Image (cartoon, rainbow, N blue to C red):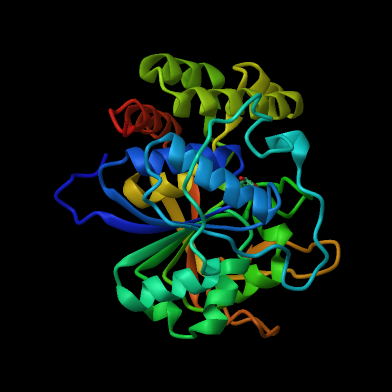
Length: 331
Ligand code: RIB
Ligand code: CA
């Protein structure tokens, strides 16, 4: 874990909760170097209304109803919306919870895009945005405030794939595929951008037993809820990947975006312009310009992003456990 002498990372978390989104939210709340300023929601794993409800619920469960939540993009910018993957995250996005406690926190009335812009203008150069769903909120925020790449401290997003096969098609990762036009605008905008894609998230398998251990340790509804959700979610991944089934685990995709923020030394990177195929069979493919030669074809001159290509998987798993086992849940 990075030293606590560094200034905390002031973060807006842009999410489509979603089970691995829930893991990542609780990691962010538990980590001493992260100050969570707000949660902006989007369609993706669930509808945007369900995403907003889940964000409010997960925060209330953890005693953090003080953190603002906004409702954002309900559909892709251009392409038609697909049905949410209920077979992966459950119809409710949290593994079809058998019951839910009452919660009183309500949405901030602003859109997710407006919230991002307002916060970035209020605290220029201080805020890191961590998007872990389709990128419509950030693309819309960029339309409202074209100076956003200079106003945000950084963008660390979960999405994309450089060499690793995709998970929605042989070349496309779900978040990018869900809104390729928004993603291409984000990658071309000049944000200080780190892409945490399948190249690294597929290297880190989190056993369900880890979440059972953490739930037993905390004996708190928040961690029991997370354990239930992860058990459902792991059923999908165990059915798809034999090596994941061997340890009855799952990929904690979104958590790695926060690990890359707090512990960048655990990753290896490649930098270059990233473009996104926006239609056709390759739609959703993130294409990293890996060589600096001059190409006859134009369109590759854009700003460089940094893509995570390798991760110290065991150190990453150890950090996730150490962080979530801390005494972080508020009464
Ligand atoms: O491809 C994995 C990504 O898509 C994760 O963010 C997961 O939550 C889904 O949104
Ligand atoms: Ca997500």
